[in-house]
Image (tube, rainbow, N blue to C red):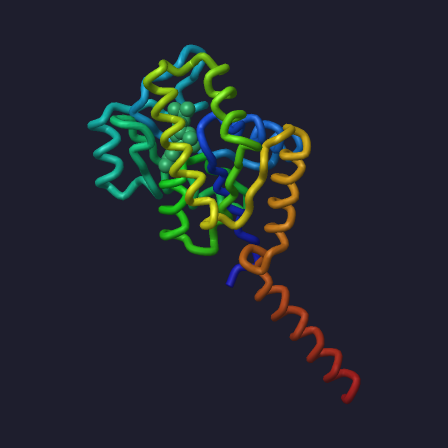
Length: 218
Ligand code: 5GP
């Protein structure tokens, strides 16, 4: 087995408007070595969004082709008619290089990643301090139509119902403590036996111990 440590795959999920983007930006400011996966989506770009930075914006045909080719690690219809998916190859390559990677995806996607990768993915749920606070934040964004706001709140309800399937819950009451909590999760997981390449270390230490014992008795 290679002694190189696989990167930590941190799946950050939680209702739209809860502040996942802000927390991830805060983590990247502290830990610029962390990578963020760029998803594909059939949603049209918002003003200011750049192809390949926020998303790869693709047609429904292109999305379906990638899905059928197995090129997506997970995908979901996050809102009616809008598909989002995580490119598989980029995830595998990044983790194999030993780089930590964040997926900012919805709850359906998080559950698919858990089903596909089991304990090799760390699921973090970002929760609002109250449902009213979430509603206010979403309404204050002014990027959503009344219809889309209603859809997002209904989706949020279902996502909160699934909280028990996550490894960690971070309440985004204030940004700084929440960013610190996310960083703490990442640092702890870097040392978790599921990521740390511990077998290689163990083999080396046991071999060294045997050598020492051999020379002590020899
Ligand atoms: P938005 O349209 O506001 O950029 O994103 C809407 C939602 O889609 C967010 O909650 C985000 O987490 C989710 N999302 C973004 N990319 C993916 C993806 O690749 N897969 C899944 N399942 N959800 C995604």
